[in-house]
Amino acid sequence: MTKINSIDFDALVKTIQEINGEFAAQASRAVNVSLTLRNWCIGAYIHGYELNGSDRAQYGEGLLINLSEELKRLKVSACGKRQLYNYLRFYQIYPQIMQSVTAKVQQLDLQFNNFNIEKVRSTTALLGVDPQKLLNKLSYTHIEQLLGIEDDTKRVFYEIEAARGSWSVRELKRQINNLYYERSGLSLNKEKLAELAQKSPEKQTPQMAVRDP
Image (cartoon, rainbow, N blue to C red; front, side, top):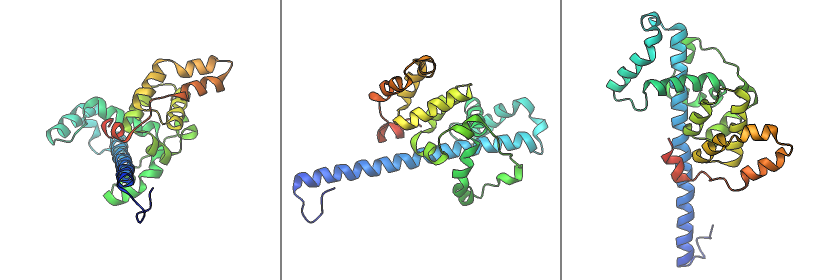
């Protein structure tokens, strides 16, 4: 970045452009992380309620429908039945996010221990991307695509590749639809296939990152 005491007009324009881009990127990452943690916490609470909620028997299998309707009445956004199910699945597949949610839990005084939520172990938790890197590299919209993959190893593969290549959500969808995982598993030259996949993916931009969630 240009030194402030040796700047001409063109340099001023370029520097402001760089400053704007950097802070826009920081803002979008902060928004993405907050949305992701919000959805994980919702899933954790639903999971805890299903295990130990004092009146859980009253709702049974209708829990998510009733919960969705009540949250809609209270104008809580993005809490449809399917979305709540995904939040629950998010918590169950990515329990390691707890390592990164601690600070937010303290700020909001979220009492996870009241529900005696156990630490779920999964292939994703054991082999996947580091929780903090996951939050910084992938938006919740990326994670939604990963939640749709039933096979744990396959999910971890796309998680690692998406984070490593800074794939946009569109690029992640494309790679899944093009069976990148299956082709890499059958390929005799896996390194070359990975190189081709990473060669020109559509990258995540600050604008796209804000729009995706």
